[in-house]
Amino acid sequence: MSKAKKIKAKADTTFKYLQLLNGILRLTDKEMSILADFIDLHKKIKDAGLDISPFSTENKKKVAEMQGREDFNTLNHYIKKLNEKGVIELKNGKYQIREFLIPGDEDEIVFVLKK
View (cartoon, one colour):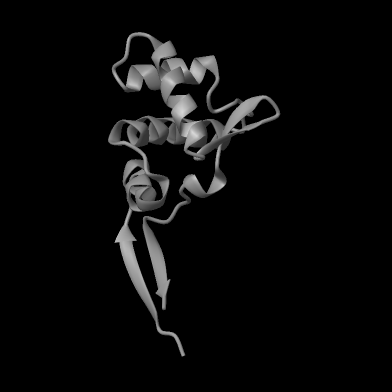
């Protein structure tokens, strides 16, 4: 009979949520920071009932501003890397954030370890 061990981890920001998953994702701190900004912006847009690509030009401009970057086109390098690492995917000609990376309303994650 296998024993299961539960581990609770606090994740009160999107960046912290991504940090908890990063053993699997293997993102750099900068990639996590940029992805967290895209996720937070995407959640706001979805909550407003809008259907806009998370990586639209307008969103890239907003994330670049949040990141303190003057040229939003520099984010294209990171978007390509995020795609290569499998955390975003190309669907119908547009990049999409994988659903499991978008945190819900909970502020903690529970990991269940089984032997």
